[in-house]
Image 1 (cartoon, helix red, strand yellow):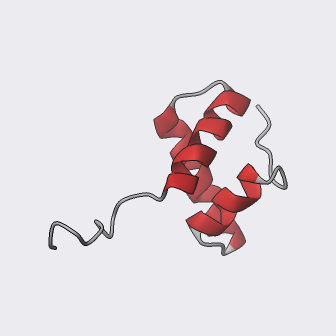
Image 2: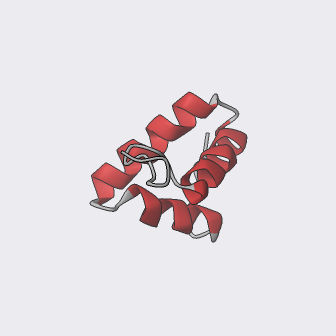
Length: 64
């Protein structure tokens, strides 16, 4: 990896934003929110970025 190439394991900005929204919706930690996002994306056969967009657009909400 060079200085100008992104880390392939790094999360996109939209995933970070969705993670914050899920944490606020559930009243949980950022770590738990990311775990919830990953589980739902996997269960729905979605890419994490795709689910993040749905969360940011208000299509998907997480209920406590």
